[in-house]
Length: 257
Length: 306
Image 1 (tube, rainbow over the protein chains, first blue to last red):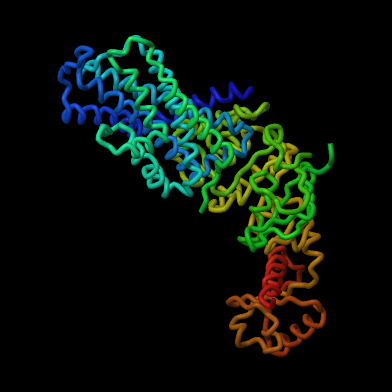
Image 2: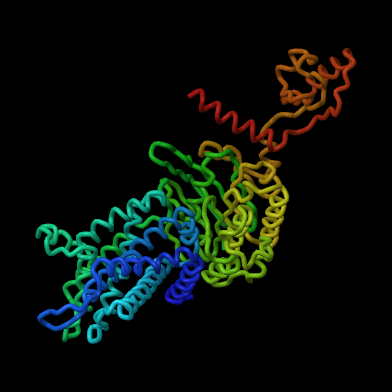
């Protein structure tokens, strides 16, 4: 079988295994919806009169929640599942088989990208139906590209971070410590207008800021163009490359004891 | 095609200061069952992991099915099957799905039903892997290794933790593989397992191969005769010149000697004079177990003196 067919086949098995764990599935999908509800309680979804026209407040926090969903479904999920599979000896088993390593890695990235897209679809739909989010129209292609590049980058980085995760017991600490601070300074949870400029500049090194900004732009109801944010996409693309290079160069198929 | 599935020459491997495999040389013929026998920590697992391409070697030449395992990829992996210690499969897939998934990686796999039948998991086919017992998971592991119809199978301690009947089943399975012309390399610390299954044995301890050959050859190389008998209260009844040279367990006495005739003469004379029966008196060559313990013990003692 060709590498492409093996990869597609592997995605199917990944998908099968994913849906077999009802508790994991439930909490993966309920997580962003809980955030949606909390944000609505805190900020409401009232109409908002701006110089450009009228929109709703919820239109501004839904992109942030979408970014959070993708980061947790791609980065956190991939890093945790890989650490777990590695401790269980599943990765060593695969490594000893003729399945090309690249098929295995790409299958997991494609699968978590798919789950991320599904999550965003659910969150945005709920926002539109329940909380008066203004649906994007002309920016839909730009949003899809942003989501695809973002999910792929965060999945690849999820693989890359396992390089410094020695075993599954250390995984939650390493994964959370590496992503939560970045989420906080990247305009996802809290607005960064009042932050010192050095912190904003620092945040711009990391992909979350650019992902969140590109999504914000995609949900801007007053955007008349296509809404492609090439500079943000470029930074995300660079991080995707970093994730792939670190994974290819340093990835370990066995836990360090 | 050469007659050898595996050729190893001067293989060495260290982790930091510790030498785990120390300059070992052996060949494995095609179609035979080959056992690396030795106590825990002898370097058996490291050796097979080098042969499988899981580990880099420090020194020596290794050829497996004509490939250097560290550079070989797909074509090499398509011809080998591996059962390692501490590997697993995705817990959220069903047994049948797991074997099916692995079958798909190989160009000429075994039929699914046959694999399940060989490892005795036919009725577990629709069970999730995480619902299997420990022994069943181990058997699935073997099934996964067989799925690709491998020419060469590596089994690292395949029956550790098996109950006696599961162990017999595994032995039958390995014997069947041999009948099918497959080459099997197994590591074990069970002497009876090596004796029962292997055409050739390499006895390993502390990273070195201490003896190599068929069971008969290994035993023949080790000189000595075993004298055994039963005697109540052997420890007190038996004169000191006998008991010093004997191993006494309850009423069972065994003695190793290089001069069996004088010992037997002296022993039976003493028994006649003292009206002792020496029940079950036997004179025999040492078993693999005797030889194994001798060899391993002397290699450890040598180390202690250094």
